Length: 379
Image (cartoon, rainbow, N blue to C red):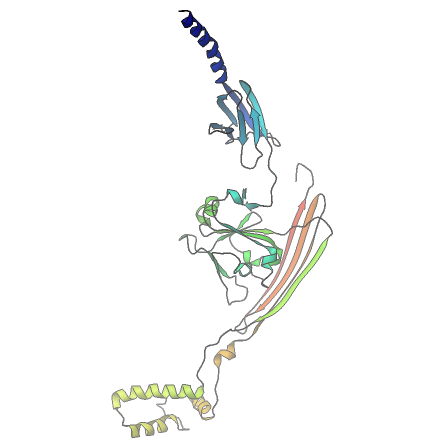
């Protein structure tokens, strides 16, 4: 009996200890931006080291019940993580600090996303890579630089090369990708951009593009960031080149005498189907009708053609309308930066001749990138 009483007393002493070890507390509060003081909806509130968590509502408020001694972790895209050690029931105010823009980010319309956050394939091309090919066309500068991107040059001067990213993916929006230049969506006119002004090009190939732009991004997105002034001494740069274009392979053509014989044989073969001339009469017919200096009414040659044939002349009409096409490009830029701002100015002249005579293209462009901090709250 005494032993039973002893066990009962011991149980009464141990139970409060278990109760204190498993004591639950309630934490309520809100989450704000430390700089703007705005409430942040959708912030993840997780118990560190577990899957227990909650999320702030549209007013930035949250409520969670956890064990005493737990550590709450607050996280949100674009902000630094914050931790809070739970000591008891409390109402708290949490402030999250925005994360500065890093070099591994891709700037898109209205959003800043890290490559690690994208679900699809992203390829980056820098200005040093673009300058390996002397060209004034943006798409041509990308040719052979990004896997899965097919670029076909245009023979017409000034016309942008066609580009396809992983084939055709959209019926409604054609086959071309969309272009985002310094955060602005550009539907046309991107071919006027001078490749010398480009700092980086990010090519979004699949799901990541569709998630941001919907159906318009089904054919991929080309995100372009142009150059800005860098701190240090002011810089003046010049880039120029001169080149020519010609047909790499011409189709072999028959000469005047061969063309005459071909047309004669074709005419005689057709004539034989109805008259069935013997060989002797066939030779006389050719001599009388196709080798005579006086052209009879039923001949298949004009007087000029017969004169050229009899004199042994040959004309290549393709040479008469084509030419070696010369082109040139000149670009000059001025850039610099200080403590309160930066500037980048560039001017470009491009001139191209076409492979067909009397076809040419001439372009003058200029660009200014200017950043200036007027007031700390206005920058």
